Image 1: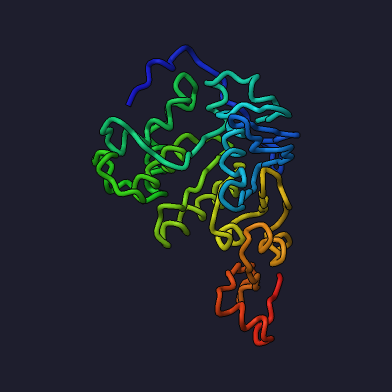
Image 2: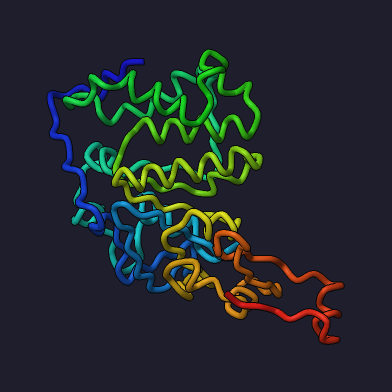
Length: 292
């Protein structure tokens, strides 16, 4: 699939970030939607070689933060930097070489075949030396997300989970060093949830910075190097899940009593809601809540 509108001579390929380098940063970030301040002074850094999970209840500001990091939402205050420069200083074509974005929902008005949808991820590389690797990048992304078997099917004919995997394949084919993924597991079954988070870990191991919005705290604990817990437009805590997933904090933020237990084999935190019958047992002294 050609993209002639981007073929305007040869453009420079950005250098890969050094391991551990700050590749995306929010400094004092504030975002307003209408009259409401949705983000109120966010400081956050996504580093090369790391999976950063954004977690928190509905309305906490996770998707807004991701959209601001991608430069899809303007800041009302503070700033966002990608690859060392404020996002407003990058031309759109150069920004697309540095970050790829997976929104919450993937919709298309035209019945493009799956293969062409994934090839759209290569559009930013037109006019660069890496345009020659388009087909290899597309094939690799489709194999990783297990969508190669229906490459010829129209995107509009897919199930919700299949669409989510095709949308992720488009992002992976882009091969930008910063991946911003908004709830990539929401429509997926158990197998494919694990598949997607393994891909995130593999991309981080290859040197990318990965920021992923997750509702499943178990996945965030198992696959995240760091977790930022958002609440009411602020970051309550930011650090390794084993350190920041604490029962009292999560119970307060989610307004739902939880236990945080170590996995019996791996020690990874397991976050379990305390349900109504169990609360009575806790009050009567039959169950002890544990915090990791």
